[in-house]
Figure 1 (cartoon, rainbow, N blue to C red):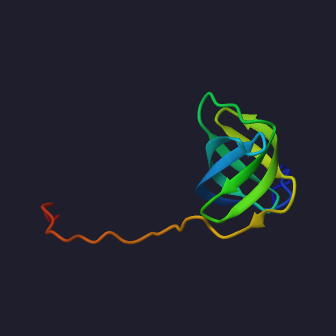
Figure 2 (cartoon, one colour; figure 1 turned 90 degrees about the vertical axis):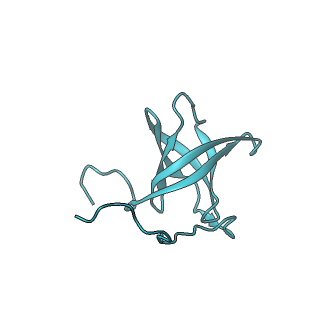
Length: 111
């Protein structure tokens, strides 16, 4: 780990949709998880939207829920620490990745 790195755990780069839930989960904001570790995450939120200082982060694709505290803000990105270990339930949806197969001949010229 870099000497200038203040994180307590190495980050894993990801790109997952998530929800910021606050006010006893009656209010929500959409966000994207850009990277994540065992102790925190970097999130991207919409321009002009201000996330609260404390909230629950819900990552539906993994079934993860975790309380968070914002530790830094830079434009559309925020860094959060996890206030407790993430709880992992049943994923609410599945990520399906399949290869694209051409069914019709290509009209592209051969090189």
